[in-house]
Length: 105
Length: 271
Image (cartoon, rainbow over all chains, first blue to last red; front, side):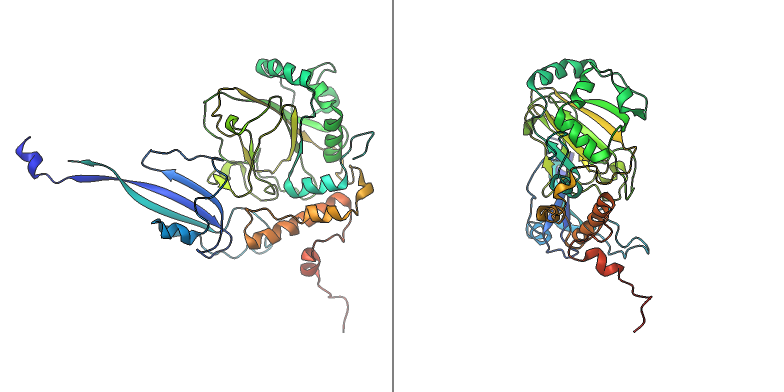
């Protein structure tokens, strides 16, 4: 053990996990209709079609479990002439968790 | 179903219009399924884009015999009519424990034709288990206006269909359906043979329409899928109604007044 190792503070190495929830309407406490996950820790590898049941019943349930909301889809009025078009899912909410994966000196 | 020609009936056609797919379980005989494994492993020679079906495959070829299975012939006729063009075909192979799941996508490019559609035949010669990573598809996604893999961000949607099927199953899908090959987590190589067909006739009343007014037609068309947002789910039924009007030639058909209500502009009549 060196003198440096005794005096240099430990640095936590942090990684981000991302959860995307698609909800029944624009309210955060509405029902989950779709979900995706990305794991910056590398511990899991979520992918397309890997689960039949969502991780939470509502967006609010994700907050209660410690996920932090970092982005919510804007409410955009339909483009004139395209009011009846259907396309991407509208009510998209991004959440994050920050996890410590190790400690470096 | 038309017994002689194996045409779809209106209830099944309505189900296709709502779901964007039609599944025919175990319609291909076992001996052909066995043969298919070697045929598909060797590859199927390509055909030129837009080759008329009758000229695309030699009469004794495996593909010609697959398309001659009565339920397959009847469904294809019901959906796209006689003598469609073969757009292209492809053998899809998912190696055991190999590769990643495909991003959710619709094939080709964005395609918003309101009164015509292509179909893709997907043939599964083996029993497909959940582990084998059968095709993922999203019922009722075919009318969404998206371009190819721009939907790749969506990993899972409520009510998605992770195909598990017996050997010899054929699925027909509308060109717009969101789908993707799932990761094969099994020890078995999985094969799927796909053929895309383009219609050459107006796709109107090509099926057995003797049951057109069966109440089940309406209930099939009115289905709501679990992944639909509440508001957009109503627009899905609006758009489905327009497609059913095009396919039946009935300009007054409606579900719960969705189209009629917002089309009502009585400018000609004065009070």
